Image (tube, rainbow, N blue to C red):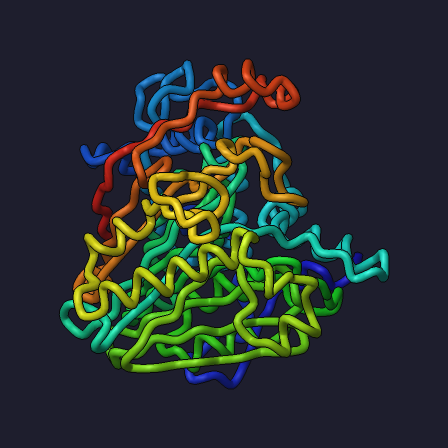
Length: 445
């Protein structure tokens, strides 16, 4: 599959980039781990143990920093890297950590792992029938100007995933590269990018996204989305630069509507990144929401099979709820309101409150008799697995708040769900409980 995972090395942007990345050298990459609110620091052995535990491998950390041996309460952890952290250096760091954990993983394993989200886009493109591998996943918004409490940006996102993998999406990365900007972002074990994509960099940008549902199209000669996303997070200093990194070499994989806040310019944007249609909207007074719907009519018609006129579809119901909430709270939107939005259980199709299901901003597919086909069948164990939010002051200080599990506080019990719905029994060896944890503040450094 030539070219599918080719990394981008753009030149001529406003951010100076090296012509070539040096090969990893011994002693160049240092790291510490800080777990939970206690800020426990550990050396390489502890980092390896924590990485092993978060990845669900043998020898889980029994000290409770990530989870105990029974898969009990999971907290976010922070892994800090110093040195070159793009591509070769990032993969070398991860390869070394897996080796210390007794797991053999080469550059091809780790590249495929990072690109796993977009592999389905490639395979779907091979059948020539415009089938889609893009599910409805995640709810997010960004607002500024007269819409927020202090007239400055507020941004928030919750990650919708299957609970099988979502219970492991519990890492906060604090990355200090030698080139580019410092990054504070959430992510999945083994990733060099965020994956569900919520991050802040030291240039004052906050970045998140939601997937474009039912998207089809893929360019096998393009640049992998994970490589573009990581470079944009590390090197972009403005909305224009972010868009340039994401557009250059676009392969159509993991097609998203990206939401960006630039606190230095008090500006927000939405980059709807199709393969044929690319739409960049921006404002200093307004909001953009994301709930997996294609916003641009032409993109929807030409590059998706999305049912734009069906209000019962999750993405359309959540889009309607975003419009209701943001209008209702105009001028009063701050961090606490953002967190409340992400926990919302109002179903706009049935016009029912306190009705957690696949149509609510805080997703609970496991409680839905409809599921979210074709992504999840009826009562599929999936939904909002964690949430993040930040206001402008936090972005300037490189801080974010995050909550592991459903932000509404409802927990998920794996054994109970499997007993009730035995069609998912095949997940039993790996499916874990997903308890809801309180919002916790994380900061770089």
